[in-house]
Structure formats: structure tokens, C-alpha cells
Length: 219
Image 1: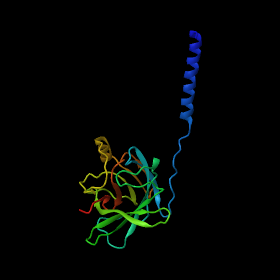
Image 2: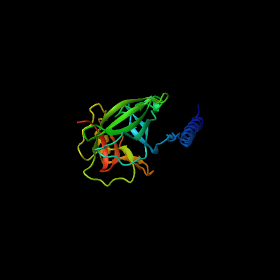
Image 3: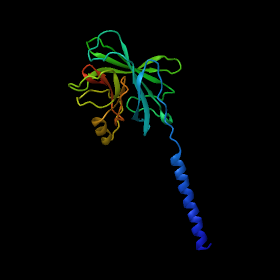
């Protein structure tokens, strides 16, 4: 084949590849709509490490009510709701949250009988609505003092204070991830305000009367 002909073929090939790339780039990205859950407000989306590798999208929101504290008295109260979009059938890593086709989750606070606030994560069957206790522990103050929020908020972050967590919670081994999640946080809440930073494997935190609290272990 003559050089001129090779040149025309190569030019056509390159142009074809470039056009394909442009078309792919112009293809709209599908964004999952935020779910609407009765009684839940301030639903936000959180990128989280997946157990199988990569990331999943976890939605979370709060049930309106007074700010909780670490020495709760009175009847149990539902605080928050979570749902893992479960891209490619993946589980959220730290808590093992199943894809939302299999389960959704709620956080219920109650008194543990010793003057401390207990948290329980219930797994909700999406078909039957049956609730099963999935994880539990105590609510711990996250900071010595932090100005309380105006309303309930929930998100993911590490705490400046040393807080015990359940040893079964799976953390990413990446030092970079740990440093990032320690320095930053992500939240959503009743006010509708959101801070979108990185905390892909941090624990759940909640706004409370002392400012910021976290869901720690019993000890």
C-alpha cells in the first residue's frame, strides 16, 4: 500500500477514535436520586469504602426531634436512617451495610439502664419491614466541647478524643484514608446544609447536646 493511502487510513482511524471519545464524554452520567423516606429529612449521600473494594454510595438522614445526649432518660427514640445504594452488589465496609435491595438501617437511642445512652442499629427488611438488631453500643462525646447544632445532624467522621469502637467494625488499612477521615467529615441534617468532604471509612457521628457525639462500643 502506498504511503499516501496509509496516511489517509491512519488519519481516519485517529479521527474515529477521537469522535468516539468525545461522544462518550458527552454521554450523561446517571446520578441516583436521593430516596424519599417518610419521617426522614435532610437526606444526604456519602461516599463510603466498599467491603469488596472500591466505593459505594450510602444515603443517610435524620428523624426530627430534640438533640440527644450521652446520658439519655426516657423512652427509645429513632434518630437516623441509612441506606446503601450498593453499586455492583457491594456492601459498605465499616458496618457491613447490605445493598438497599436487601436491607435498610435505622439508629435508635435508648437508656442502657446505667445512666448512659445506648445506640442500636436495626436492619430493616425492605419487603416485610421487620426490624432486627444489627449492631449496638454506647454514645460517646466526640469532643470536649463543641457548639451544639441547631438541629439533628448525622454523618461520618473520626473524633479528636480517643473513643473505643467495636473491634468487628472494618476499617480501611490505608494510612492516607485514615489521615483524611480524621481531618475531615461529611454531614447532612435537618437544616439541609451539607459539608461534602472525605470520610469514606469513618464512624457514624451525630449532633448532640455536647456538640458532636459518636457511636462507640460499650466499654
